[in-house]
Length: 302
Ligand code: 13P
Ligand code: SF4
Figure 1: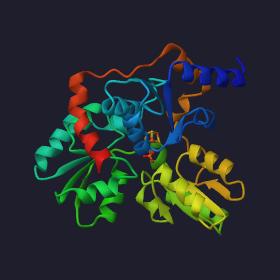
Figure 2: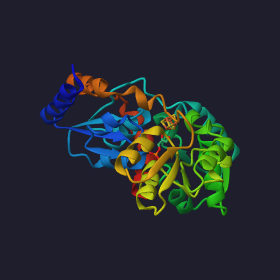
Figure 3: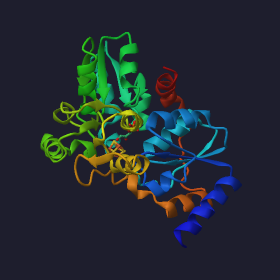
Figure 4: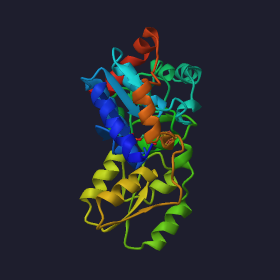
């Protein structure tokens, strides 16, 4: 089938099945273009919770679809590719969290939304990269166990010095791969530039950033910035979106192949199959949902 036919069929199926399609900014542009809303992970959670449609398709990775299900248990939540996981989410287990809680009984557990439902269920509150500072500051506890991203946790510790942040050893393989020399090389190639980075990058990278924020916040910064040349320190999906949206600006990636392979597993054909066959449906037990819901609800309400 030609891509134009696939696109047409996706639109028909979306209407027929009254399905809401949400895509993350790291999805291929062709998938983003078929979505009702393109979002960062916080907006995705909020939109999934507010959805009026009975069927919601999450074009992203599995933890995003699981979060949508937990926030909206009565709806059918579909993901086009079940193998689209997030390696960072797999780096921490509930047992790791329970062990840390025993070692630090006076600490609150703040869990990055990039985590499994089981890990969320042993955490006090979830956060995303756009909400993390607000959430950590809102907590009465001085001590914070932050899981699983050590880079985001270190960024929080720096921004909120009044808290003591206990770090876990997780990381995003895509963001963690970027080094200080990548940044220096990009800056040398584009001397009159500003650098905007995602807080999943290492501290040595963030130290050179003119702006640090979530995917949506980086987009917003690039749109509003007076600077003509912007180096982007996050996934290629953002770079491509900005290049198309801001043709009068020079948008560069900080390093070649800054790509999340799991986000790129979804293409037009996978989205079409998902709508046509109503697969793959996220299934969680009532117990799993009830246990994980509190920490996500708290995040969305703050
Ligand atoms: P955002 O919360 O910025 O959308 O990031 C999600 C993610 O997986 C980043 O790697
Ligand atoms: Fe997970 Fe990193 Fe991909 Fe985000 S970019 S989904 S944190 S692997």
